[in-house]
Length: 231
Image (cartoon, rainbow, N blue to C red; front, side):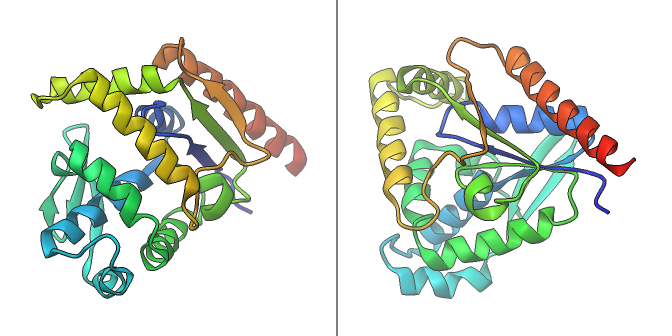
């Protein structure tokens, strides 16, 4: 019997998924699988190869040529695309917007979902994305759906990009967040949706530590129930 849980964290861009999935995985001793980074890496590969995001046949041909790997170095999680460290390259506004278009391609989604399922099948994982609890692992034992206002999510994204030395405007960043919301929610393949059994958390006025504490309470409650069921 599987002793460790599959924890799914879904929600729109800027709600805190990436930070919280890393923190939660660390607290639980689980593996963190950043599914958003996987799609971003694929989007970068498509851009590098000159494949138009609307060219589904071209994207399908690219799928078997893309190798995405994760590693942890000096306490930092790294993303590699065909052996190259692309951790920073996949976090630009250009790649963010391109990712939503690339992720709508059925061939890309099927490839990424298959890889995510293989990575997380044995449990002991925290996965974050937009369709983890609805498509990738609909039977995950714990599901969270993080939200925050577009203004707050745009502000967070703006501060993150400024800290990296990128020249961006706050209004433009908020507009890009709202556009990505619309793209993610309206796509035919794996749209951004809250699973019926997901626990919603509005992070707008909460600190990361406060959200993490709430998530840990939920996970510990589920673990206790699992142990009780085994007796």
